[in-house]
Amino acid sequence: MKRPILYLLIFIPIAVTCLGQSPAIQRINPTNWWVGMKNPNLQLLVYGPNAGTLAYTITYPGVKLLKTHTVENPNYAFLDLTISSTAKPGTLRIVGKRGAQTINQSFELKVRDKAPKGQGVTAADFIYLAMPDRFANGDESNDKFADMADPNADRSNPFYRHGGDLAGAGQHLDYLKDLGVTAIWFTPVLENNQPLTNEGGAMRSAYHGYGFTDHYAVDRRLGGNDAYKAFVKKAHAMGLKVVQDAVYNHVGINHWFLKDAPMKSWLHQWPTYTNTSYKYQSVTDPYGAESDRRVMLDGWFVPFLPDLNQSNPFVANFLIQHAIWSVENFGVDAWRVDTYMYNDQPFMNRCNQALMDEYPKIHIFGESWVNNVVDQAYYTRNKIDFAFKSNQPGGLDFVVYTAMLDALKQKFSWDDGVNRFYQALAQDAVYQDPSTLVTFLDNHDTDRYLSVIGDDFDKYKIGLTWLLTTRGIPSMYYGTEILMKNFKDPSDAEVRRDFPGGFPGDKENKFETSGRNDREKAAFQFVRKLATYRRDNPVMHTGKLMQFLPQDGTYVYFRYDGNKTVMVATNTNDKEISLDTVRFTERMKGFSSARNVLTDEVIQDLKLIKLPAKTALVLELAK
Image 1 (cartoon, rainbow, N blue to C red):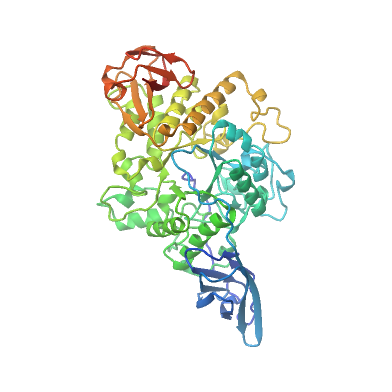
Image 2 (cartoon, one colour):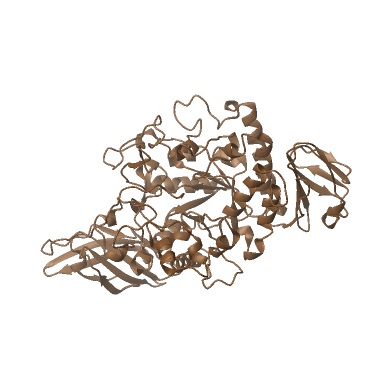
């Protein structure tokens, strides 16, 4: 999530319930659990009028109620349970008593199914990022609901919801499969029952999904929980993985638990409203002031996204259990974490570890929007002697993102042009495993890639060649393959336009070959060719990387293993050159010919390779 504009100051009160009111249980989170989980411990949040004044008991074989916690707000109780390995699936009864009143509440313990889940993503994958509201509409009946805080849906208004949903996305999985995609990442699908906000003079909806109002409900406008389960099941049946977008740092102002907060310490509270500084340097600065660090971490991201206090153990348990519940319930495979660096980092380590303990293959990559390798390394497994050591397996690679764009925009010089890309990769020694970083050329918070490079199709192909052949896990923003473009100015909506053909009544359908113009066909086929080659050739994701110093606007690197060697040679100049390969003998010795992966042309003489202007060749070397 990008740094937002600031607006109204909103305070979150704790409601006071009359203690004379009859107690009731209206909600339990998690909504269910499973037997056979590796961690036997579970903490239930119980909510309702005077729910915290009840004396609780649970009688169920293999389940013990260890402790009941009461907090400032008498409407909450937190129950610590342990579920033994001998417990059977079934419905247990949570019994609450106060005086002569007895309340019985059911809670289901399910059997764990054997469907794939927590499979992770690796460098063998190619992730496709889409905003479900803007991708495809498969069910017009769920476009809007009069009883929600934002009852609007209007495709003519760029700031309102447009009606895209999970059913629509599911109808186009064959399109993604054909493109060479192996994993789908959606911006958050959880309920965002948020009112419109006034941003820059325009009323805007929370179609992006980053303001949760109920952790255990997928937004009805996307189809709800059942639609999400169906989507994941269909994706898995087609060999595609699903990445869920997590938000731990904050929630929406309309979240149900903020209308009657459990306790003051549920949120980061300040004497007067305090916004984060967004100055991430204060966290790693060895000379930094603690006050600056606290403002960065505990200040609110924006007033209408209240900042959760993850050092509160009840908040931490709520978030961690929801993460595990999501993987188990929906079967998602990997976890992208929004605004990762604004979270309490010891909490993040604990949350990451809980997920990895339960799902050893799961991959977690967070968003830490920084501009240097040291700060980026801080938030993932690294080799730097930081006082705090992160256990996050991956991360979004903003450093390489910036470097690749600079390499395409700048003229070649000592430090500029393609040297920027080379130098970013040359610092990979700070990471324990740089192949776990997720690389990208644009996303929902940035200007679109094609516009950034001046609508230059040659540069477009160079950047995508780098993305799909260098180290890391490549991710592509929806529509890049059909040349969607635009800048965020005047608004983010310009880079979040509907995918043409995804909505009833669209005049053009870019999901179909017949709906694309010649340039769009060429772009799609280019991505498809490289993505499928990467998918089908392990050398491109598990092979080693060797790069050579850029010279005179050229940049050459190799991916190689015991079976194959692939040469990627880039000419960023405006004129063709003949590349003398003698200085690459270290990697090319013994090879006499090569096949151009993109054209299937065979090159018989490797001593001099013709590199056309603004071109990146991908050559599979042969002996």
